[in-house]
Length: 519
Image 1 (cartoon, rainbow, N blue to C red):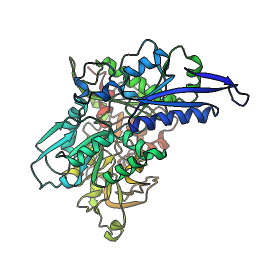
Image 2: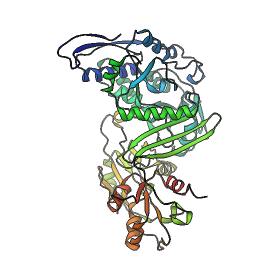
Image 3: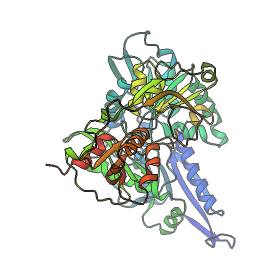
Image 4: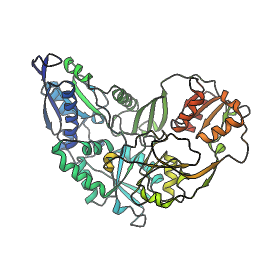
Protein backbone atom coordinates (compact mmCIF):
# COMPACT_ATOMS: atom_id res chain seq x y z
CA UNK A 1 0.00 0.00 0.00
CA UNK A 2 1.25 3.50 -0.81
CA UNK A 3 2.06 5.32 2.41
CA UNK A 4 2.49 9.07 2.75
CA UNK A 5 3.95 11.33 5.40
CA UNK A 6 4.10 15.09 5.75
CA UNK A 7 7.19 16.50 4.14
CA UNK A 8 7.48 20.16 3.28
CA UNK A 9 10.29 19.55 0.81
CA UNK A 10 8.24 17.25 -1.42
CA UNK A 11 6.82 18.71 -4.61
CA UNK A 12 3.55 16.99 -3.72
CA UNK A 13 3.69 18.07 -0.08
CA UNK A 14 4.27 14.50 1.11
CA UNK A 15 6.91 11.83 0.88
CA UNK A 16 5.70 8.63 -0.74
CA UNK A 17 6.67 5.03 -0.04
CA UNK A 18 5.85 2.59 -2.82
CA UNK A 19 5.92 -1.21 -2.80
CA UNK A 20 7.15 -2.26 -6.24
CA UNK A 21 6.95 -5.95 -7.23
CA UNK A 22 8.56 -7.78 -10.15
CA UNK A 23 9.82 -11.20 -11.12
CA UNK A 24 13.16 -12.30 -9.73
CA UNK A 25 15.23 -12.69 -12.91
CA UNK A 26 18.07 -10.23 -13.50
CA UNK A 27 16.18 -8.73 -16.44
CA UNK A 28 13.03 -8.20 -14.37
CA UNK A 29 15.06 -6.59 -11.61
CA UNK A 30 16.79 -4.25 -14.07
CA UNK A 31 13.38 -3.22 -15.43
CA UNK A 32 12.02 -2.67 -11.94
CA UNK A 33 14.97 -0.46 -11.02
CA UNK A 34 14.46 1.57 -14.20
CA UNK A 35 10.90 2.36 -13.13
CA UNK A 36 11.85 2.99 -9.50
CA UNK A 37 14.68 5.32 -10.50
CA UNK A 38 12.40 7.21 -12.91
CA UNK A 39 9.89 7.76 -10.10
CA UNK A 40 12.56 8.91 -7.67
CA UNK A 41 13.98 11.26 -10.29
CA UNK A 42 10.56 12.82 -10.90
CA UNK A 43 9.63 12.82 -7.19
CA UNK A 44 12.87 13.03 -5.17
CA UNK A 45 11.29 12.26 -1.78
CA UNK A 46 9.79 8.98 -3.02
CA UNK A 47 10.95 5.80 -1.30
CA UNK A 48 10.68 2.58 -3.33
CA UNK A 49 10.68 -0.82 -1.65
CA UNK A 50 11.37 -3.67 -4.08
CA UNK A 51 10.11 -7.23 -3.79
CA UNK A 52 11.11 -9.89 -6.33
CA UNK A 53 9.16 -13.15 -6.56
CA UNK A 54 8.82 -16.18 -8.82
CA UNK A 55 5.75 -16.33 -11.04
CA UNK A 56 3.82 -19.43 -12.07
CA UNK A 57 5.64 -19.39 -15.41
CA UNK A 58 9.00 -19.28 -13.63
CA UNK A 59 8.08 -22.31 -11.54
CA UNK A 60 6.91 -24.37 -14.53
CA UNK A 61 9.88 -24.69 -16.87
CA UNK A 62 8.82 -27.98 -18.49
CA UNK A 63 6.25 -26.77 -21.05
CA UNK A 64 6.55 -24.29 -23.91
CA UNK A 65 4.62 -21.16 -22.98
CA UNK A 66 2.17 -21.50 -25.85
CA UNK A 67 1.12 -24.93 -24.55
CA UNK A 68 0.42 -23.74 -21.02
CA UNK A 69 -3.32 -23.36 -20.32
CA UNK A 70 -3.04 -20.50 -17.83
CA UNK A 71 -3.59 -16.89 -18.95
CA UNK A 72 -0.78 -14.55 -17.97
CA UNK A 73 1.55 -17.23 -16.59
CA UNK A 74 4.15 -14.60 -15.70
CA UNK A 75 1.68 -12.00 -14.44
CA UNK A 76 -1.40 -13.53 -12.74
CA UNK A 77 0.31 -13.98 -9.35
CA UNK A 78 1.32 -10.33 -9.37
CA UNK A 79 -2.20 -9.22 -10.29
CA UNK A 80 -3.40 -10.85 -7.10
CA UNK A 81 -0.70 -9.08 -5.05
CA UNK A 82 -1.99 -5.79 -6.43
CA UNK A 83 -5.65 -6.57 -5.78
CA UNK A 84 -4.88 -7.58 -2.18
CA UNK A 85 -2.96 -4.35 -1.65
CA UNK A 86 0.39 -6.03 -0.98
CA UNK A 87 1.90 -4.37 -4.06
CA UNK A 88 1.38 -0.80 -5.27
CA UNK A 89 3.13 -1.23 -8.62
CA UNK A 90 4.10 -4.29 -10.64
CA UNK A 91 6.61 -3.89 -13.45
CA UNK A 92 6.19 -6.33 -16.35
CA UNK A 93 7.60 -6.95 -19.75
CA UNK A 94 4.39 -5.69 -21.34
CA UNK A 95 4.32 -8.46 -23.94
CA UNK A 96 3.85 -11.02 -21.12
CA UNK A 97 0.49 -9.56 -20.11
CA UNK A 98 -2.77 -11.10 -21.35
CA UNK A 99 -4.30 -9.27 -24.32
CA UNK A 100 -7.56 -8.80 -22.43
CA UNK A 101 -7.43 -6.10 -19.74
CA UNK A 102 -8.03 -7.07 -16.12
CA UNK A 103 -10.97 -5.73 -14.10
CA UNK A 104 -9.30 -4.21 -11.03
CA UNK A 105 -5.93 -3.08 -12.40
CA UNK A 106 -4.58 -1.18 -15.39
CA UNK A 107 -1.33 -0.48 -17.17
CA UNK A 108 -0.91 3.20 -16.40
CA UNK A 109 2.47 3.99 -17.94
CA UNK A 110 5.52 2.81 -19.79
CA UNK A 111 9.06 4.15 -20.08
CA UNK A 112 10.76 4.88 -23.39
CA UNK A 113 10.67 1.68 -25.39
CA UNK A 114 13.84 -0.32 -25.96
CA UNK A 115 14.67 -1.75 -29.38
CA UNK A 116 11.65 -3.91 -30.18
CA UNK A 117 13.33 -6.09 -32.81
CA UNK A 118 14.24 -9.77 -32.53
CA UNK A 119 17.88 -10.80 -32.41
CA UNK A 120 19.34 -14.09 -33.63
CA UNK A 121 22.62 -15.18 -32.06
CA UNK A 122 24.64 -17.77 -34.01
CA UNK A 123 27.56 -19.82 -32.80
CA UNK A 124 30.57 -18.79 -34.87
CA UNK A 125 32.03 -22.30 -34.73
CA UNK A 126 28.95 -23.64 -36.56
CA UNK A 127 28.66 -21.08 -39.34
CA UNK A 128 30.92 -22.61 -41.96
CA UNK A 129 28.77 -23.65 -44.93
CA UNK A 130 31.04 -26.67 -45.31
CA UNK A 131 30.61 -27.91 -41.74
CA UNK A 132 27.96 -30.55 -41.13
CA UNK A 133 24.58 -30.76 -42.84
CA UNK A 134 22.57 -27.95 -44.40
CA UNK A 135 20.29 -27.91 -41.39
CA UNK A 136 20.01 -25.31 -38.66
CA UNK A 137 18.91 -26.07 -35.11
CA UNK A 138 17.50 -22.92 -33.56
CA UNK A 139 16.44 -22.42 -29.95
CA UNK A 140 13.01 -20.80 -29.61
CA UNK A 141 9.66 -21.71 -28.09
CA UNK A 142 7.72 -19.07 -30.02
CA UNK A 143 5.35 -20.19 -32.81
CA UNK A 144 5.52 -16.65 -34.21
CA UNK A 145 9.31 -16.67 -34.49
CA UNK A 146 9.34 -20.16 -35.98
CA UNK A 147 6.83 -19.18 -38.66
CA UNK A 148 8.45 -15.86 -39.58
CA UNK A 149 12.05 -17.09 -39.55
CA UNK A 150 11.25 -20.15 -41.64
CA UNK A 151 10.26 -17.67 -44.36
CA UNK A 152 12.97 -15.07 -43.84
CA UNK A 153 16.21 -16.73 -42.74
CA UNK A 154 16.83 -18.89 -45.84
CA UNK A 155 16.84 -15.69 -47.94
CA UNK A 156 19.40 -13.82 -45.84
CA UNK A 157 21.89 -16.45 -44.71
CA UNK A 158 25.13 -16.42 -46.75
CA UNK A 159 24.97 -20.18 -47.26
CA UNK A 160 22.15 -22.55 -48.29
CA UNK A 161 20.08 -24.46 -45.77
CA UNK A 162 17.58 -27.22 -46.47
CA UNK A 163 15.85 -27.41 -43.10
CA UNK A 164 15.38 -25.55 -39.83
CA UNK A 165 14.71 -27.52 -36.66
CA UNK A 166 13.10 -25.56 -33.83
CA UNK A 167 14.23 -26.56 -30.34
CA UNK A 168 12.14 -25.41 -27.33
CA UNK A 169 13.97 -23.31 -24.74
CA UNK A 170 12.90 -21.76 -21.43
CA UNK A 171 14.61 -19.82 -18.66
CA UNK A 172 16.15 -16.40 -18.22
CA UNK A 173 18.43 -14.75 -20.79
CA UNK A 174 21.65 -16.10 -19.28
CA UNK A 175 20.24 -19.64 -19.15
CA UNK A 176 19.25 -19.49 -22.82
CA UNK A 177 22.61 -18.13 -23.95
CA UNK A 178 24.43 -20.76 -21.89
CA UNK A 179 22.32 -23.51 -23.45
CA UNK A 180 23.32 -22.24 -26.90
CA UNK A 181 27.02 -22.19 -26.03
CA UNK A 182 27.01 -25.60 -24.32
CA UNK A 183 24.55 -27.49 -26.51
CA UNK A 184 24.28 -28.87 -30.03
CA UNK A 185 22.13 -26.06 -31.38
CA UNK A 186 23.32 -23.48 -33.89
CA UNK A 187 21.39 -20.36 -32.92
CA UNK A 188 19.09 -18.69 -30.40
CA UNK A 189 16.33 -16.10 -30.95
CA UNK A 190 15.83 -13.50 -28.23
CA UNK A 191 14.27 -10.07 -27.84
CA UNK A 192 17.08 -7.59 -28.46
CA UNK A 193 15.64 -5.36 -25.73
CA UNK A 194 16.50 -8.01 -23.13
CA UNK A 195 20.16 -8.13 -24.15
CA UNK A 196 20.37 -4.33 -24.40
CA UNK A 197 18.87 -3.76 -20.96
CA UNK A 198 21.21 -6.22 -19.27
CA UNK A 199 24.30 -4.87 -21.02
CA UNK A 200 23.50 -1.22 -20.41
CA UNK A 201 22.51 -1.31 -16.73
CA UNK A 202 24.74 0.53 -14.28
CA UNK A 203 23.50 -1.42 -11.27
CA UNK A 204 26.57 -3.05 -9.65
CA UNK A 205 24.77 -6.26 -8.69
CA UNK A 206 24.49 -7.27 -12.36
CA UNK A 207 28.20 -6.94 -13.15
CA UNK A 208 28.69 -10.73 -13.36
CA UNK A 209 25.77 -11.01 -15.78
CA UNK A 210 27.23 -8.27 -17.98
CA UNK A 211 30.64 -9.96 -18.00
CA UNK A 212 29.06 -13.30 -18.94
CA UNK A 213 27.06 -11.79 -21.81
CA UNK A 214 30.01 -9.79 -23.16
CA UNK A 215 32.20 -12.90 -23.18
CA UNK A 216 29.42 -14.93 -24.79
CA UNK A 217 28.82 -12.38 -27.56
CA UNK A 218 32.48 -12.63 -28.58
CA UNK A 219 31.78 -16.27 -29.47
CA UNK A 220 28.60 -15.42 -31.35
CA UNK A 221 27.58 -13.78 -34.61
CA UNK A 222 24.37 -11.79 -34.73
CA UNK A 223 21.56 -10.76 -37.01
CA UNK A 224 19.04 -8.08 -36.05
CA UNK A 225 15.78 -8.90 -37.79
CA UNK A 226 13.84 -6.24 -39.74
CA UNK A 227 10.38 -5.42 -38.46
CA UNK A 228 8.96 -5.36 -41.99
CA UNK A 229 9.62 -9.11 -42.28
CA UNK A 230 9.68 -10.14 -38.62
CA UNK A 231 7.31 -7.91 -36.64
CA UNK A 232 7.41 -8.90 -33.02
CA UNK A 233 5.04 -9.86 -30.25
CA UNK A 234 2.74 -6.95 -29.44
CA UNK A 235 4.46 -4.66 -26.89
CA UNK A 236 7.89 -6.29 -27.20
CA UNK A 237 10.57 -3.99 -25.80
CA UNK A 238 8.09 -2.01 -23.68
CA UNK A 239 7.58 -2.07 -19.91
CA UNK A 240 4.07 -2.33 -18.53
CA UNK A 241 3.61 -0.54 -15.20
CA UNK A 242 0.51 -2.03 -13.55
CA UNK A 243 -1.43 -0.44 -10.67
CA UNK A 244 -4.88 -0.70 -9.11
CA UNK A 245 -7.49 1.30 -11.00
CA UNK A 246 -8.62 3.10 -7.85
CA UNK A 247 -5.12 4.31 -6.93
CA UNK A 248 -5.54 7.72 -8.51
CA UNK A 249 -2.69 9.43 -6.62
CA UNK A 250 -0.18 6.88 -7.93
CA UNK A 251 -1.64 7.00 -11.43
CA UNK A 252 -1.04 10.77 -11.44
CA UNK A 253 2.58 10.21 -10.44
CA UNK A 254 3.07 7.64 -13.19
CA UNK A 255 1.73 10.10 -15.76
CA UNK A 256 4.88 12.15 -15.12
CA UNK A 257 7.22 9.34 -16.26
CA UNK A 258 5.04 7.91 -19.02
CA UNK A 259 6.30 7.86 -22.62
CA UNK A 260 3.03 8.81 -24.30
CA UNK A 261 3.99 7.92 -27.87
CA UNK A 262 5.29 4.47 -26.88
CA UNK A 263 2.20 3.88 -24.73
CA UNK A 264 -0.03 4.76 -27.68
CA UNK A 265 1.85 2.44 -30.06
CA UNK A 266 1.73 -0.50 -27.68
CA UNK A 267 -2.01 -0.03 -27.15
CA UNK A 268 -2.46 -0.10 -30.94
CA UNK A 269 -0.34 -3.26 -31.28
CA UNK A 270 -2.32 -5.02 -28.59
CA UNK A 271 -5.59 -3.91 -30.19
CA UNK A 272 -4.51 -5.34 -33.55
CA UNK A 273 -3.40 -8.57 -31.86
CA UNK A 274 -6.76 -8.80 -30.12
CA UNK A 275 -8.53 -8.44 -33.47
CA UNK A 276 -6.41 -11.35 -34.78
CA UNK A 277 -7.47 -13.63 -31.94
CA UNK A 278 -4.80 -12.87 -29.31
CA UNK A 279 -2.69 -15.37 -27.40
CA UNK A 280 0.97 -16.41 -27.61
CA UNK A 281 -0.06 -19.54 -29.53
CA UNK A 282 -0.74 -17.45 -32.63
CA UNK A 283 1.93 -17.31 -35.33
CA UNK A 284 1.49 -13.58 -35.54
CA UNK A 285 3.58 -10.47 -35.00
CA UNK A 286 2.73 -6.79 -35.07
CA UNK A 287 4.95 -3.72 -34.73
CA UNK A 288 4.08 -0.02 -34.84
CA UNK A 289 6.65 2.75 -35.41
CA UNK A 290 6.31 6.52 -35.23
CA UNK A 291 7.90 8.54 -38.01
CA UNK A 292 7.46 12.16 -39.10
CA UNK A 293 4.93 11.21 -41.80
CA UNK A 294 2.81 8.99 -39.54
CA UNK A 295 2.63 5.53 -38.02
CA UNK A 296 4.14 2.53 -39.80
CA UNK A 297 2.24 -0.71 -39.15
CA UNK A 298 3.77 -4.12 -39.85
CA UNK A 299 1.82 -7.37 -39.46
CA UNK A 300 3.07 -10.80 -40.55
CA UNK A 301 1.71 -14.15 -39.47
CA UNK A 302 -0.59 -17.10 -39.90
CA UNK A 303 -3.69 -16.73 -37.76
CA UNK A 304 -6.12 -19.45 -36.75
CA UNK A 305 -9.32 -19.18 -38.76
CA UNK A 306 -7.90 -16.42 -40.96
CA UNK A 307 -4.78 -17.78 -42.65
CA UNK A 308 -1.77 -15.78 -43.75
CA UNK A 309 -1.62 -12.14 -42.71
CA UNK A 310 0.72 -9.60 -44.34
CA UNK A 311 0.18 -5.90 -43.83
CA UNK A 312 2.80 -3.19 -44.32
CA UNK A 313 1.04 0.15 -44.25
CA UNK A 314 1.19 3.74 -43.07
CA UNK A 315 -1.36 5.60 -41.01
CA UNK A 316 -0.47 9.03 -42.38
CA UNK A 317 -0.25 11.96 -39.99
CA UNK A 318 -1.80 14.35 -42.53
CA UNK A 319 -4.63 13.35 -44.81
CA UNK A 320 -3.69 13.81 -48.48
CA UNK A 321 -6.37 13.55 -51.14
CA UNK A 322 -4.92 12.45 -54.45
CA UNK A 323 -6.93 11.92 -57.64
CA UNK A 324 -7.74 8.31 -58.38
CA UNK A 325 -5.13 6.66 -60.58
CA UNK A 326 -5.57 4.06 -63.27
CA UNK A 327 -2.93 1.66 -64.54
CA UNK A 328 -2.25 3.81 -67.58
CA UNK A 329 -1.62 6.85 -65.32
CA UNK A 330 1.29 5.48 -63.29
CA UNK A 331 5.02 5.42 -63.91
CA UNK A 332 6.72 3.05 -63.72
CA UNK A 333 4.28 0.25 -64.38
CA UNK A 334 7.12 -2.10 -63.44
CA UNK A 335 9.81 -1.18 -60.96
CA UNK A 336 12.69 -2.05 -63.28
CA UNK A 337 11.57 0.47 -65.90
CA UNK A 338 13.71 3.29 -64.52
CA UNK A 339 16.81 1.35 -63.54
CA UNK A 340 19.98 3.21 -64.41
CA UNK A 341 23.11 1.69 -65.90
CA UNK A 342 25.70 0.91 -63.20
CA UNK A 343 29.46 0.69 -63.70
CA UNK A 344 31.83 -0.48 -60.99
CA UNK A 345 34.60 1.83 -59.75
CA UNK A 346 37.91 0.40 -58.42
CA UNK A 347 38.32 1.06 -54.69
CA UNK A 348 41.39 1.66 -52.58
CA UNK A 349 41.84 -1.57 -50.65
CA UNK A 350 44.08 0.07 -48.06
CA UNK A 351 41.18 2.32 -47.02
CA UNK A 352 38.77 -0.59 -46.80
CA UNK A 353 41.06 -2.61 -44.56
CA UNK A 354 41.08 0.19 -41.98
CA UNK A 355 37.28 0.19 -41.66
CA UNK A 356 35.24 -2.03 -39.34
CA UNK A 357 31.65 -1.17 -40.32
CA UNK A 358 29.97 -0.60 -43.71
CA UNK A 359 26.58 0.85 -44.60
CA UNK A 360 25.65 -0.47 -48.06
CA UNK A 361 23.28 1.89 -49.87
CA UNK A 362 22.60 -0.57 -52.70
CA UNK A 363 23.74 -4.12 -53.39
CA UNK A 364 25.55 -2.80 -56.49
CA UNK A 365 27.85 -0.91 -54.13
CA UNK A 366 29.34 -4.18 -52.91
CA UNK A 367 29.68 -6.36 -56.01
CA UNK A 368 32.86 -8.44 -55.70
CA UNK A 369 33.61 -6.46 -52.56
CA UNK A 370 35.68 -8.26 -49.94
CA UNK A 371 34.71 -6.99 -46.52
CA UNK A 372 37.36 -7.20 -43.79
CA UNK A 373 37.01 -10.09 -41.39
CA UNK A 374 34.73 -9.30 -38.42
CA UNK A 375 33.35 -6.19 -40.16
CA UNK A 376 29.80 -5.06 -39.40
CA UNK A 377 27.75 -4.96 -42.63
CA UNK A 378 24.47 -3.03 -42.70
CA UNK A 379 22.23 -2.57 -45.74
CA UNK A 380 19.62 0.00 -46.73
CA UNK A 381 16.88 -2.60 -47.04
CA UNK A 382 16.02 -6.28 -47.22
CA UNK A 383 16.49 -6.56 -51.00
CA UNK A 384 20.14 -5.52 -50.78
CA UNK A 385 20.55 -7.83 -47.79
CA UNK A 386 19.27 -10.80 -49.81
CA UNK A 387 21.52 -10.02 -52.78
CA UNK A 388 24.61 -9.71 -50.62
CA UNK A 389 23.76 -12.92 -48.79
CA UNK A 390 23.51 -14.70 -52.15
CA UNK A 391 27.13 -13.61 -52.73
CA UNK A 392 28.23 -15.09 -49.41
CA UNK A 393 28.26 -11.89 -47.33
CA UNK A 394 27.17 -11.99 -43.69
CA UNK A 395 24.82 -9.04 -43.16
CA UNK A 396 24.04 -8.03 -39.58
CA UNK A 397 20.85 -6.08 -40.27
CA UNK A 398 19.33 -3.30 -42.31
CA UNK A 399 17.57 0.08 -42.17
CA UNK A 400 14.40 -1.61 -43.46
CA UNK A 401 14.04 0.88 -46.32
CA UNK A 402 13.45 3.72 -43.86
CA UNK A 403 16.60 5.68 -44.59
CA UNK A 404 20.06 6.33 -43.30
CA UNK A 405 18.76 8.21 -40.27
CA UNK A 406 17.46 4.93 -38.79
CA UNK A 407 19.65 4.19 -35.77
CA UNK A 408 21.01 0.60 -35.98
CA UNK A 409 21.22 0.62 -32.15
CA UNK A 410 24.33 -1.53 -32.07
CA UNK A 411 26.20 -0.01 -29.13
CA UNK A 412 25.34 -2.70 -26.59
CA UNK A 413 26.19 -5.59 -28.91
CA UNK A 414 29.43 -4.08 -30.19
CA UNK A 415 30.60 -2.47 -26.97
CA UNK A 416 30.58 1.10 -28.25
CA UNK A 417 29.69 3.55 -30.99
CA UNK A 418 29.83 2.15 -34.52
CA UNK A 419 31.10 4.50 -37.25
CA UNK A 420 30.04 3.31 -40.69
CA UNK A 421 31.68 3.89 -44.04
CA UNK A 422 28.85 4.32 -46.52
CA UNK A 423 29.27 2.54 -49.85
CA UNK A 424 27.30 4.32 -52.55
CA UNK A 425 27.50 5.67 -56.13
CA UNK A 426 29.42 8.61 -57.50
CA UNK A 427 26.38 10.86 -57.90
CA UNK A 428 25.04 10.41 -54.39
CA UNK A 429 23.78 13.69 -52.96
CA UNK A 430 23.30 12.34 -49.47
CA UNK A 431 23.76 14.66 -46.53
CA UNK A 432 25.24 11.82 -44.58
CA UNK A 433 26.46 11.44 -41.03
CA UNK A 434 28.81 8.81 -42.43
CA UNK A 435 31.96 9.22 -44.48
CA UNK A 436 31.21 7.97 -48.00
CA UNK A 437 33.01 5.98 -50.67
CA UNK A 438 31.81 5.73 -54.27
CA UNK A 439 32.12 2.14 -55.48
CA UNK A 440 30.03 2.43 -58.65
CA UNK A 441 28.87 4.99 -61.18
CA UNK A 442 25.31 5.48 -62.45
CA UNK A 443 24.33 6.53 -65.96
CA UNK A 444 21.01 7.32 -67.57
CA UNK A 445 19.10 4.47 -69.26
CA UNK A 446 19.96 4.05 -72.93
CA UNK A 447 16.43 4.80 -74.06
CA UNK A 448 14.64 8.07 -73.33
CA UNK A 449 11.84 7.57 -70.82
CA UNK A 450 8.40 8.58 -72.06
CA UNK A 451 6.10 10.10 -69.44
CA UNK A 452 3.30 11.04 -71.84
CA UNK A 453 -0.10 10.83 -70.15
CA UNK A 454 1.42 9.89 -66.78
CA UNK A 455 0.23 11.61 -63.62
CA UNK A 456 1.53 9.45 -60.75
CA UNK A 457 5.25 8.68 -60.31
CA UNK A 458 7.34 6.59 -57.93
CA UNK A 459 11.08 7.22 -57.46
CA UNK A 460 13.46 4.76 -55.85
CA UNK A 461 16.42 7.15 -55.96
CA UNK A 462 17.26 10.77 -56.64
CA UNK A 463 19.31 10.34 -59.82
CA UNK A 464 16.55 9.20 -62.21
CA UNK A 465 14.20 11.84 -60.80
CA UNK A 466 16.68 14.65 -61.54
CA UNK A 467 17.28 13.29 -65.03
CA UNK A 468 13.53 13.07 -65.66
CA UNK A 469 12.67 16.64 -64.62
CA UNK A 470 15.60 18.03 -66.61
CA UNK A 471 14.33 16.29 -69.72
CA UNK A 472 10.58 16.73 -69.10
CA UNK A 473 10.00 19.35 -66.35
CA UNK A 474 6.24 19.27 -66.85
CA UNK A 475 6.05 16.08 -64.79
CA UNK A 476 6.55 18.22 -61.68
CA UNK A 477 2.81 18.95 -62.00
CA UNK A 478 2.07 15.29 -61.32
CA UNK A 479 1.80 13.36 -58.04
CA UNK A 480 5.09 11.90 -56.85
CA UNK A 481 6.01 9.25 -54.31
CA UNK A 482 9.14 7.68 -52.85
CA UNK A 483 10.38 5.79 -49.83
CA UNK A 484 11.01 7.51 -46.48
CA UNK A 485 14.80 7.80 -46.78
CA UNK A 486 17.26 10.12 -48.50
CA UNK A 487 15.27 10.34 -51.74
CA UNK A 488 12.36 11.84 -49.83
CA UNK A 489 14.59 14.48 -48.25
CA UNK A 490 15.78 15.66 -51.68
CA UNK A 491 12.33 15.58 -53.30
CA UNK A 492 10.93 17.73 -50.49
CA UNK A 493 12.95 20.63 -51.90
CA UNK A 494 10.89 20.39 -55.09
CA UNK A 495 7.46 19.77 -53.56
CA UNK A 496 7.63 21.30 -50.08
CA UNK A 497 4.37 22.95 -49.06
CA UNK A 498 2.32 21.08 -51.66
CA UNK A 499 0.38 17.83 -51.65
CA UNK A 500 2.27 16.47 -54.67
CA UNK A 501 4.74 14.34 -52.69
CA UNK A 502 3.84 11.45 -50.42
CA UNK A 503 5.87 8.79 -48.62
CA UNK A 504 5.22 5.07 -49.14
CA UNK A 505 7.02 2.06 -47.68
CA UNK A 506 7.80 0.55 -51.08
CA UNK A 507 6.88 0.56 -54.73
CA UNK A 508 4.39 -2.21 -54.07
CA UNK A 509 2.80 -0.24 -51.23
CA UNK A 510 2.45 2.81 -53.50
CA UNK A 511 1.01 0.83 -56.39
CA UNK A 512 -1.51 -0.99 -54.21
CA UNK A 513 -2.66 2.22 -52.53
CA UNK A 514 -3.13 4.39 -55.60
CA UNK A 515 -4.78 1.66 -57.67
CA UNK A 516 -6.99 0.20 -54.95
CA UNK A 517 -10.04 2.14 -56.15
CA UNK A 518 -9.67 0.92 -59.74
CA UNK A 519 -12.18 -1.72 -60.70
